[in-house]
Amino acid sequence: MFLKANRRHKDGKEHIYYTLNETIRINQRRTMQRTVLHLGELTTHQQHRWEHTLDVINEREQTRQMELSSEEEYQRRGCPEDPDVVAIRLSSLEVKNAREFGSCWIGSKMWHLLELDRFWEERLGELRGEVAWSKVVELLAINRLCDPGSELNIHQRWYWRSGMDFYWAVTNRLAARNRLYRCLDRMVGHKKTLEKHLKEKWGKLFHAQFEVLLYDLTSTYFEGLMEEVPQAKRGYSRDHRSDCKQLVIALIVNAQGFPLSYEIFDGNTRDVSSLERMDQVEDKYGKAQRTWVFDRGVVSEENLKLLRQRGGSYVVGTPRSKLKEFESRLLDQSWEKVRKEVDVKLEPGQDGDLYVLARSGERRAKENAMRRKPMRKLFDSLQSLSLLVQKGALRNYDRLVQRLGRLQERHTQVFDFVEIIHRREGEDIRHFEFKLRAQALKKAYRQDGIYIVRTNLHEKNAGHLWEIYIQLTEVEAAFRCFKSEPGLRPIYHWVPPRVEAHVMVAFLGYAMWMALKWKLRSHASSLSPRQIIELFRGIQLVDVWFETADQRKICLPRITMPQPEQQCVLDQLQWNLPAQPPPRIYSTKQGGDEKKCVGDSAP
Image (cartoon, rainbow, N blue to C red; front, side, top):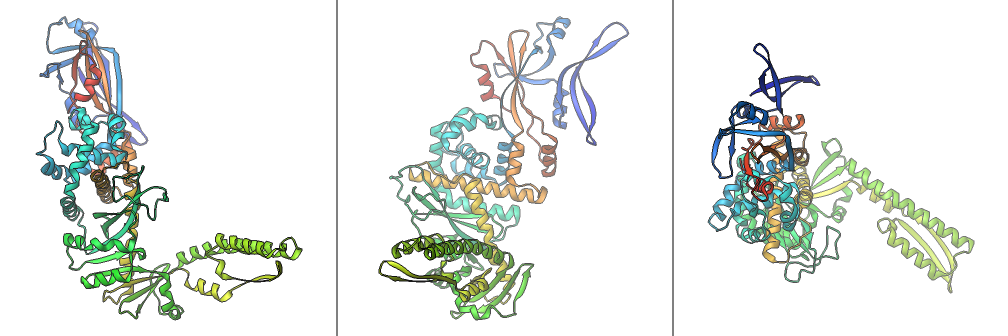
């Protein structure tokens, strides 16, 4: 037998497909070749392995070199007792148990890139167990990256649809339900060291800078009563689930979006009161040359005073009500253009801080459009109400007041731009009219698209201060990713340590997500992490089964060959899929042999 390369040109590219052939002599002068097996496209390593006889493992776990041949060749040679020859029935070929492999393999690559395998092995390696606890943590984190679900979902469904057992060469006890939950209990005590480890890796791998830290809050809700979790409380829900108890989570990232730390607060914590643990963060990362960037929801005079007392620098958003102080300066022409649609100017404040007034053309157009539509609806409703009064269809004064109250509730944002005059005579309406408050509307249009940034930095360049603040969009994007991609919400646990561990696993999943994002940025910038994960779901792990002439079975676990677009990404990233594992031989007398092959096959 030999490997034969078959070349084919398709879409302007040469493809090489390999087949396993044998030479058959017809007479003394003529021979012919017969195809035994189609192998498809092979990597250099796979080609090298097929050129040699296959490593197989018999049911006694003894490795030896054996030759793979067909039953006809086996009988033709007349060597049924040769222990190095296995005869197969080609008609018995079956492909079974296809399961997802490529996306899980991508997650494992990110796990090892961040050296999280070493981190958890050093901290959980001494604990007893049939399967290493570090592998269980890796399983939980990869699930959060690829297909977020609960621990029960991992145990019942996801693990069996993945090829993680083959890749790690572990038993199925890895995904035992109790083991997953017990692993959560062991993780929570290593939060500080994990954050320190990730900070070192961000700097080493991606040259991350930590002079500017961005801070924002989000929430995630619980399913259930949560009577045993003291932090689960009802509060302002960013998930629009006011019917559920929740947690408030603060996330800290650097200007590039790399996650550095997180804190968990009670569900009823107000944004302005969440900075009480800022000293803990400064203990981890230091105070020197540290600039904090907050949204205006976190800002209060007490918080800014606390930051100044600690010697901290800040660049924060400011409520629109502060515009009253600078209203007279909005019409000045001393604006500096920093982008095509953005102008800025620097103004000193009465409190000693500097204020950056930013004016965005796109934001102004958006706010104008948001006001124009409800204003039109309000005018149409008032016009209809006026016609009813004129025709006498609406005479009762109390009914008129009720109708106006409903309009005010429906159009709260624009109702103050209209002046309504009405008088009564007894219970009847005597006079009703409305008119536009032109000065108030003109003032609102003048303030459209303008927002204020406040800082205590001694920076005189308004454009640079604005650039620092605009980086807050990184943490907002990080939160959207943190809540959606690693499956932060909802939380099904009701044991406090496991609630904290749930957030930690989501934090790990997000760290792997960011590592993949920045890895792609330097090699395949047009693709997002989600696109890569979805693309590599197509790489499957399958079991190829043959029956032998002596009533045994051969199982070949095989990773499917990558498609051209998948191979292109692998080439860009300079990655190679794992080597194909050796086959295993099972006696038909063994019960449940097919299931056994799935659990025990190893590279």
